[in-house]
Length: 237
Image (cartoon, rainbow, N blue to C red; front, side):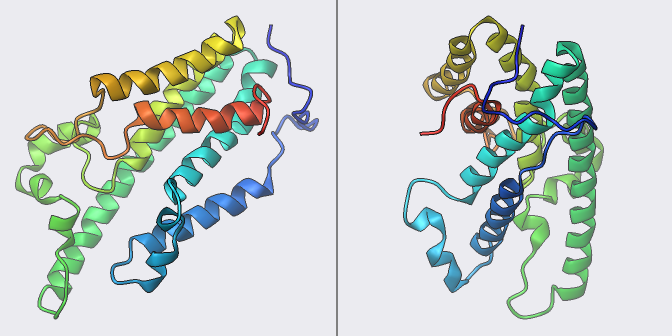
């Protein structure tokens, strides 16, 4: 049976997992860096981590998300049983799925308003085109199906779908860990290698071969590195 690692603090009597303020700090810092990186002609963009090394705020955010997921969900598998943990993961995936759809419709509405109000201004941008929303407005009836099945993922909208897919892997990793730690590690590393060797990816739109920009089958390795560190399965370097 699974036991709580010695170097992971026990949850308080209320049953709520302890919150690590370091996660909030670094996830907030990552979001600030991401905002700076996406502002055009911004001189601060020359000083983001990606300019000095192989990783950036996106890697920081995914790693911290895996660490946070271990705190939020990992202990549930231990305290309440495997299937209760699966139910909690399923509920969070359901919540994130509807957050993704709500975010899409909200931003689509903002893009339409911005285009109607500011299209005549100098240096104005057409965000309907920039976010690849044109196909949705041209044929909403068919694109709604793609939107709800995550086979139509416009530009900049694949963060939450990526998170949904990775969260769905958490029960698999937890189950493999019950067999052996190396089984869980082997699954994550093996899936990462297979993704590169066989170009495993998810389609972002039905009319082209464009995939999701953030491939969850590859990013899961970074997510579960944070997850395993938080659970105490592997030791910090």
